[in-house]
Image (cartoon, rainbow, N blue to C red; front, side):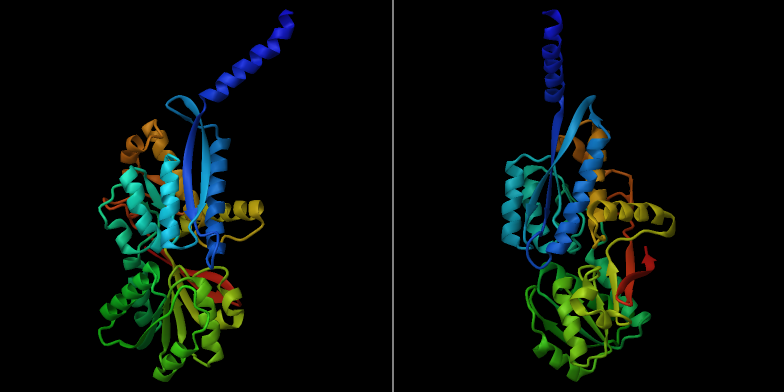
Length: 378
């Protein structure tokens, strides 16, 4: 009888250990439906990798074993859907949020997280307003539009030599924001630069012949597009079809591995210059290469754009919790504000507004249809 009781005793002991394990809920939001679903899924994959690796380490916080659980939400790139899922995560009492991808969803959602006292780290939001709202719970791990768009504007006139520029944006918070900063940067670098056209489209448009015909008549030597690759790719394809020979420039939303598929390899090769709102220097490259290889092995897919930043955002939040010995937002938030975390995308620390300090930009072009890095700018 004594030996028969042992399995029961062991079972109770294991059950007690399991119940002692604290569950830490991390929300992740990205558009996994709609035109930017390929980017949203890339983000989601980065979050899953981080959570799996954290759990494999058997992390303890305040001496207790913890299990990280990822709550995945789809905002569809739509502001109303974004605020709805933000409230859903608040109601679920998540310990922190990684997201959103689009500025247009991150900005309204950030107020909901702030009011609930829940830290939010965006791996992709670049609109300057995001961190200018006075929310102490709001952070980003990529450079903002002032740096991204401004640097591209300066590069367009200083390095590419553009003198007649047409600008198109999709009227989203991101697209308009990065286009406005591009114009400012170009005019600052070359006050006499001629902005021959400023045209607008939407983030769901597919036919650009009317605005491109007007632009063609102005004979620009460079066209800048503020928006995502799902629109920028077809736009570039139609530029080529209309015989517009101008160089093409875009921000991080168009700077993806998918752009050649959306525009055609011939349309991107030797034509496109774009920037990613982040980047690694030569001494950091091995860490990024290792991540890319692990990602490829796990998902049998290439990194699209932001997944390394999502991965780092999750790890940064988890590190702040460990340093605070608590996953309670109010307790680990001060540690997040002063974090120094060496990630695969570089050193992550934040200024008083929640912007990443010394955020890098990486410039890319496309060689035979392949996205190719050629310069990192700090």
